[in-house]
Image (cartoon, rainbow, N blue to C red; front, side):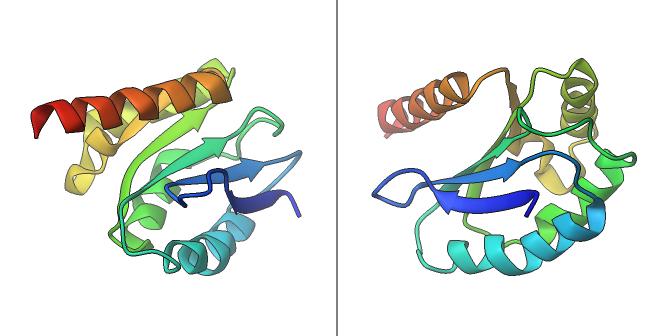
Length: 133
């Protein structure tokens, strides 16, 4: 399966959505509707989603259009999505989505170049939230 979903921490606060090889939007929509939604329904607290595109081929066309359709279908507990990619085009797509900020979703998405960078960004977001309390 070119798209897999799993928890990467024992507290079930970070979901890894890994894209491998060639994938298409039909597969992505099925994963969002089934595996991703189901794993999110295991918990009642907010979760982060790391979308790891490093092992994937170039993304299919119309990424912004599909993202606009996909994220509103998820349970409302997703706090932030970190898109991990070394592909400049993918980074540009994320920035376009952030700029459009449809339904406030743009502010809930960031780019990262590595999985470690994404995890560090989550740690920083959690630290900032604790500091604000």
